[in-house]
Length: 296
Image (cartoon, rainbow, N blue to C red; front, side):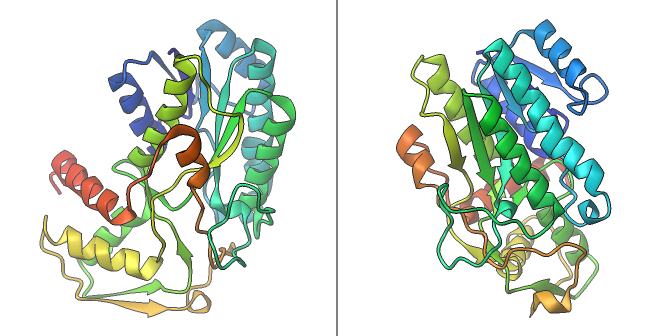
């Protein structure tokens, strides 16, 4: 199935493009400067030229803290850009898969959020992504909005690579222990997105709408860091011996984070039969690939 992947140079899209090619899909990789989703005319012209059978929009402004001081840019990309893509897909009758985030929720829940729970973002990033979701819903009938959480991968900047970096030179790390969520390897999300395409290629698309897709299980950033170091030590010597738990208040950031942003993935399991693996297994596999790729 010929699929245009927007934001193709990003951490998620890099793995997604590789996976889709391996599955036999035709992949059109689009990113800056060839495609800027802030430019509605450019979106229309580019998709018209490529004539894909499906579009996956991975393009986004993702700097959570910087979004507080660059709100105009965040909204221009995450809200207006999403609308431009949705409008073009709707006009051309192309199914759209749009990536969103757990940060559309405020974190006041005590059980994993379902797709039906009411969003209430805490910051500019989450609000801009929510408005992007709404733009997609109101514009493109054939759409999937896929929310994910705590993404990490072999490429790009992410929590796993940051922890390993500091663990090489510091005997002790201090990591927030009162925020809980679902770590998600980019390859796991890519496989979930691929499952949507497989069903479309078979002519039996899953019901259109919003889905959650993330690693199975819930943990804190501090517990996540402990396992990163423990598994990283299998591949290289690390100086870090302890990961001290700290509170969110002890690690102030420009943007507020949800205290609890675990996502319920039962809907995607029911619709596609796709069951994300537990986050611990995914982390081990990601680290094996990271060290095999980088030789770190």
